[in-house]
Structure formats: C-alpha cells, structure tokens
Length: 424
Image (cartoon, rainbow, N blue to C red):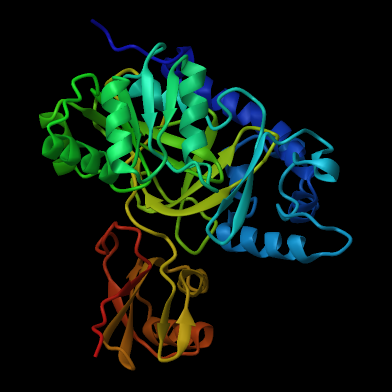
C-alpha cells in the first residue's frame, strides 16, 4: 500500500512548486504594503520586481523584537492606535477595514496575533494528515485554549479534516484521562510531555486507552527516546513545527527524516544576526514568508535554528526539508558589562572580505571573562589579524583575541556567539 498524501501539492515537481511560490510573491508584497507597518518598511520597493529568492532576500527580516516594539508603540499611540503594530490587514471596528478577524490572541511579550476567517487558517490539517489523522477521528486536543493560539491552530486543522475535537486544554489530568477513555479518543494533539503524563497516569490508575493510537506533538522537543516510549504504549507520535505568528511551518512524516516544509510558506535559512541566506546544509535562523494577505508577514525571523536537508522525503513529498529545531538564533550575551550581539559579529565579517565565517567564544568566569573571535579565512594577508582585532574593538567596544581558522573548520551548529563561561 502506497503512502497517502494530503493533496497533489505535496508531490508536485519541485520546479513547478518554486515557480508557483515565486509567482505569488509580488501579490504578497503588494498586500503587505497596504498595511501601515509594511508601507513604511517597504517604502521604495517595487512589488512587481520581487519574483526571485534573491529579490526576496533583499527585503529586511522582521524579528520578534521589532514586532513587539512596533506593537507597543501602536498600543500607546493616541490617534493611530493599532495593537498589531500596523502589520495586520484584518481586525475589528476601524482595524477591520480589509476583513474581520475571527479571534485575537496574546502570546508572551505580549504580542497579539489575529486569526482570519478562512478554513484551516493556520494550515495544520496537512501536518495532522501526515500524522495519520483522518475524517471521523476524535482528536483529544491538549494545547492551551487560554490566550495563545496553540489549541486553535490544531482545532482548525482537525475540523478542516473532518475530525471531531475534544477541547482538553492543559491541566486537569484526571478529568482529561477520563474523557480520553470514555470518549475513546483516536488521537492526541498537544505537547509530548503532557501526553507522557496522561499515559503514566493511565497506567497508574489502571485505565486502558486502546483507541488512542496517534499523536501530533509540538511546543517542545520530541526526542527519539520519547517517541519509542510512546510507541511501546501503542501511540505513534509525529512532530510539527509551528509558531503563533505564522502557523504551521513544517511537519514530520513516516520517513522520520527531518520536517517537510508546508506548501503555504517560503522558508529561508539566514546567518544569525543578519538577513543573508546561508548555503544549503549550513545551520542558521529560520525565516518564513507566509503566502496569505490577512496577516502578511514577510521574512519573519522565528529566532529558531535549523538547516536544509538535501534531497526529497522518501514518502514522495517533494518540498524542502529542514532538520527540525536546533536551538535559538538570538545568542546575545553580556561581556564585561557590554551586550554583544550576533549582528555585531556579522558586521566584523562584512568589513573583511577575506573572512568566510566567524564564531565569538567567551570563556573564563563571569566578571573575569575573555573573548576570542575565531574566523575562517580564505587568505591571510599581512596585518589581517590586527585589522580584524581593531574592527572587533570598534564594533563591540571590547578587546578580544583573533584566531585564524581554515575554511570549513568551525562547527556547523548555527552558533555565532558561544558562551562557555562558568559562574563564579
């Protein structure tokens, strides 16, 4: 029996997919420019010219820190009040000039996110299907229904598949276990840690859950040891990668080889602290462009690290694959009372074309630390070390040692700043 797919988009020719994604870009840029924030950010950008990945890469990455800053400013502005910072095309009352928001959510920051009225707005049905969910299933949804969109992301996708949803939310373990058993839930959506708690409570209480056989998990790391632990108890778990801002980004398949990128987004991997895409296979920050006009986020920096996997998924899904979550891109640290940012390391690189890659290593003890900038260099002309040292001091206002390294010798883990200090 062959592998089932959610739709024909998953298996289309990669060149056809790329052409369709790029053809959608000018309209997406134009839609974004109708919002106050992007009208400002994209001033002077010709939307019709954004038809290649290179053109997309010339647009600025928008990160959570800037989104939060603009939202705070928008919430406190008297005459131009806009809790979304001007990025949303939908809302309510005066905010809803281009459409009505079904819901509005609050994530840590706080950052507010709107939800549009389209079916499967967050595009999670594709991930649920890959995890084995089908029409007629009862989905026990244990993501939080409080403030944040997590539960609604899963619920909208489950309902789009034709599933029934039990809104378990978080906590109340005994009641949730009772409901899962008495309603004979077919599958679980939620964090992997809470699913483990439920199954441990079931074993402790002597409650059988023979119908609970599949799970779509997110919000936390899902190590292979826990995947095997679940399988021993009859539950086949898959993970997906989503955020409150952009919804589903990528999802796991039965091949268990990375995560397949969703059909409704364009994913780039950029060097932390910069807006610049890295070569395939190099670890960097996940940047997402969502192809929808309600909340038209362009080049949204997730702050998460990953890398592109070569080749296609053995299940026949032909889209780009990423390795999954590999850490955080924001590696800002404080050295001798001064904040040092990945963007500053990137600025040092920009000043010296002989350099390929850099890694700032901070060692020693807190308040008695030292910096070493390790750089991969194509060539090492006389005076290069002194020149890089001067640039490091100029950019960071701190002194550090410079070590020249051979190309390809620095670790491929996305780290621009490695903090190896001990507390003492």
